[in-house]
Image (cartoon, rainbow, N blue to C red):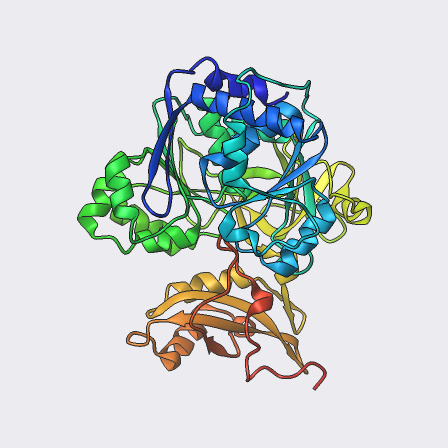
Length: 498
């Protein structure tokens, strides 16, 4: 299953239909039909081919959201290129690693971002590239492709080490989008407000592909800005919004009457890329009258599990395996565990990437008999709902007891004055590790002594945080995942081996 015939349901069959509005950070807007996007990407494909790019070559982009990212993606599909999206928050160290590892022919970027890119790879400035492409032929150029044709090299967030490039195929993207369009009942009548970055699989594999497959309308914004969100929602009146937990936390700040107006038109709000606290799920339901659908995916697998569109969207859970995915929860030896027992999620299906780029050892370690070991810890309820409890690497073992930080974090976020919370293990000479909580608090409402007293009534003694470390902000990736390795070491944590 290749992508272009599915894209043609919109690019050709809906050519005259309004497809896209783009708004830049300075407020400038532009509108396009699906036919416009077909012509733009045809022209760019001709130019890229004239510059020597061939099937299988890598082409990177280091760009904020803009129509040229869509042009690049479509042209990449038509030429059989391997597109390498790069997080715009990355700087010299991360950029150098990815560009050396992927070895792209060039990196397409803007004048504002070009200074962060080393001179090892040719830089193609995006405005100059678009201007040159505008004079190229309109006719389509396309090479044969199938489900196994590599489409993208997307690097993991690298929160615990050097990022690895997941080789995602056209079949991965096609399967993922077809399943979501069906599962979430997305049609050409929908209106999708897109604020997620297109360098990430959440905005790219889900948002952009659902839009192209369904033929709905999309308004693409450079990035999410909570102060502008009320105007965006009221002007555009979206029926679809995909976000990360941090966005939904900021949306809870809107006045009730504004929130209720937005919620009355919002058919589906989806959350992913990081765990959504159950408290945020419930507060959003009360304020907006709309129930967030939380789902679970990864760079390597795209979407795996989701709460039902028609059915109970259970707070704190990620729901059931999607139609194209098999999921099992395994113990350390790889044997499936019983419902109600914690283990590692293993997944299998046409959504799983072809492996890690130039990392045969990492690929061999992650795949077992066709199953991908996600590294995520979770538990399945008897009725099938899956709850995530964190990364295998985040597990805290204290005095022989397993502690899953997510459980403690959920309790902390329910407490007065706690705005954000994350829990990590700190070395302890007696117990091996002990949990330490990092908190962003509202000083006017936070009482550390009272917090400790409440936690003693809600958590087992070995799960009690041994220290509360107040921080101004919790370091996160662009999509809201906590970067625990960047947290300051708590002064009260015992030294390793002390």
